[in-house]
Image 1 (tube, rainbow, N blue to C red):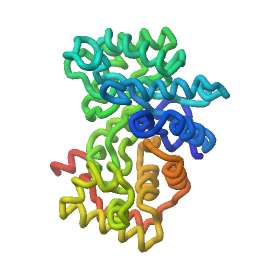
Image 2: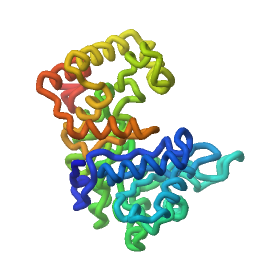
Image 3: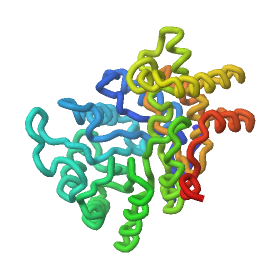
Amino acid sequence: MKYTQLGRTGLKVSRLVLGTMNFGPQTSEADSHAIMDAALDAGINFFDTANVYGWGENKGRTEEIIGTWFAKGGDRREKVVLGTKVYGNMGPEGEPPWPNYDLLSALNIRRAVEASLKRLQTDHIDLYQFHHIDRRTPVEEIWQAVDTLIQQGKILYTGSSNFPGWKIAQTNEVAQKRGSYGLVSEQCLYNLAERRAEMEVIPAAQEYGLGVIPWSPLHGGLLGGAIRKEREGGGARSTSGRSSTALADTKVREQIQAYEDLLGKHGLEPGEVALAWLLGRPGVTGPIVGPRTADQLESALRAVELELSDEVLTSLDEIFPGTGPSPEAFAW
């Protein structure tokens, strides 16, 4: 495994981030533990989760599964850089939403941290991430809550997720005025087929020293050989949901077909190429991979060592040109 610094921090993290969203809803606790063991054995030390994972009446379940894995000992917790998130509603299920169980008020941040620590069976969270912007809570209030938790030793660093570039700038400018350390990472939707983050989010992250952590690096399976799997009758995820809807669009299907044809010509696996491409992008710390099986984890690991030729990179830009940085993307 290769490692890098997380943004401007001294924290060293793996170039692949283990995403855990499938743990519970799609992957059993036993299989989830096996995947985490395999990831650790492969050198992946950066694990990502969120308090709402498990979803619906099972929200919080993913954190609980990670917690029972930590409880097995063997330096599991000590070896892991653990990130979780706050924003989604964690109030009682099956009744009207009760106030202050979601968003980023100081009250909910404090409540959410304590609940996550309990589920995760740990005394601190390494990277506490804001899952979405909160347009109603003043940034000063958020940092007041964060600084208190840092002083208490309950969190070490903070990151954002799904923030626009202007919000990254605003949040870190307020942090600087307060003498707070500020955001150290941004977790955003970014992949070959979805490159809008290159307009302002990634430049803002680089300007303020945030590591970029792309989620959905295979764009819901679309970049993982979706057409080939459709033809072969395999890959349930690749032929359903977002991928299936996208492939119904003629333009998208032609684009993905060109992608798969290009990689077939070079003897490359689509999913591995999509990850390798992200690993080579400026500002990227590491993409989040969310394996449901050990085989999927093995495929992701191969991408770390994959070097894409200039010819392939040029062809990928032709197929997925992106928008380019702003303001040139929409002006001159």
